[in-house]
Image (cartoon, rainbow, N blue to C red; front, side, top):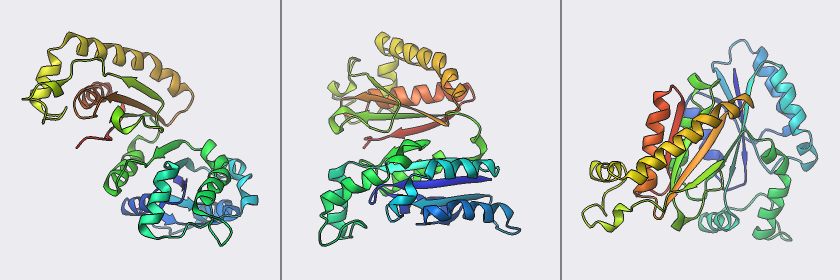
Length: 285
């Protein structure tokens, strides 16, 4: 049975993630006190009629800080029960979080008459630091909308590939900043840019005119060969470390053409090698 812990900073999308998991027939419990996590897992393991094959538990800053130090030990005990465990940690930039709270007029759980929103966000980062360090998957939701986050969670938790290292290929534009939730970042701004061709400017990297243009560029093909060769060489080493995910980000100027094209091409290549592949176009319009 799969046992997911969904944690993260307030305002980063934990409730959205849990709702997505409920749609996938997970048995979900939000804001369970950390001290009760092991007892809950034991109850689930021995339940005769749970009615679900997978469980997800939301853990956030409302837990007592004194319990946080025992998180790694608790997760190890849950794994000993026979669960396939993973921890997903959601985060976002401080300014993004403060903006979200301001726009929704929601109260941060750590604010009070003596604690400002800025202080609460920083305190929450310290409180959840140990969970963040022990997370299997890190998701930065700073530039993700609700629909993108739902899709991303669905891709992450596909049960039929649970024992296989999953490759996430993400395209992005440097104009919007470098993603913080990836293992490798490759800059492909040195390649010919379809943007400067008026006939191609409004097309995307998934459109055939752009594909034909980039397919014809020797430098683009060499970049693909280098990236695919590098990853093919090192993926087995990551697999030996029992990694669940390996995230690769490809960046161009705007995240519309070159990075999108290469992500799609790399994804198709590794899918052809029977790898589990997740595709995410962060800035594609």
